[in-house]
Image 1 (cartoon, rainbow, N blue to C red):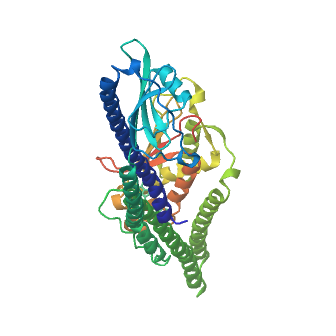
Image 2 (image 1 turned 180 degrees about the horizontal axis):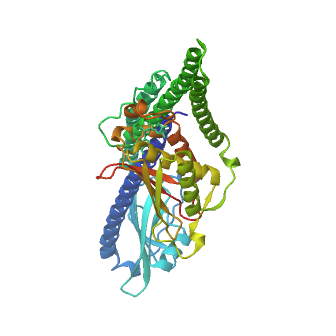
Length: 460
Ligand code: ADP
């Protein structure tokens, strides 16, 4: 069932129940009021008769009884009567001699309660006990026909109002449900029109701050992420071919030129060395891509163990200086905790070392003085902070999101600094695997700070 129909039905059901209860209450209250007024009328008639007849009642003989034919008993032939009965349940006075006396059982009931009002056949009856001058109890009974026409008319009016009310509510409910859901249909139409080739379109959000606007906004945020993923994928494909093609072309050109004529051993050595450098660079890219693929493909299969973070940083520092003797790394461990336990983090040692090494390598690579400062602040709850600080050119704010994408290289470094563009995307994947948050800070004094925040113990 469509939401529009379901909403209309629910609304109709609720409104119809409320309307039915209200209309019934109106009818019931009016009926009770009519009856009360009618009985008040009967009471005054009984009082009037009692005033005149009660003086002589002690001397009145019982009246003869005239029984009605059996088929007359449902509807009495008179509309009003007042009668008096003595303590032997004999009628001693009546305005309508042809009226049938009340059954003894009813009279006993009145006597028992002192006063009773009830319906008898088609009449409303009020019975009351009165005391005669001779101190004998008499029952005075006033009967009357309460015309139900007015009440029936009111009932019919209420039923017709109910039917019209329901019809009007169904129509308005269906219309408003349609109006309320129209933006959903619009969103659906807009989404249907979107194609993977062009993800730049967004769903219209409208001016109201309602749930549907928020739904459209959430959808647009999802589209932002999908577009970003597509963009990264496209960039990855074009960059990967570019990054692989360039060194291969360079090696080929170098070898072509070298082989054009005979050369002395030194020239061959130089050429081979240059080719070897390019092969190494290619090997590095391939190694990083392999690691990335491993993390993406089977993160659950990567083993974790407790590792001392301070030792890991020292190992990364040594590796850095061994790879590039020009680079200098300084580690500021802050205040070391009392217990060695706190220095441990749960990690894949090789991967986390690679991430730290990459960050230190970048810091040195992009700093004119080729130095990096690694500040560590150990926290008792395990949420350690590691800041890799350099005094390089910093990173442009618009590039902050892109530098972590595979193969992204800032245009300002593309020709001046050698690189592959894979390092930071590998760093991000490794840190994500370890539950470590990474943030790039831009200190006022220049340079950049890559800040890592380790997860609090037991929360990876
Ligand atoms: P690569 O360094 O090989 O180019 P990365 O993925 O490590 O690749 O870095 C991506 C880009 O981020 C770099 O091209 C550079 O523009 C920028 N970058 C990374 N680290 C730094 C840094 N410490 N200072 C300035 N820019 C940096």
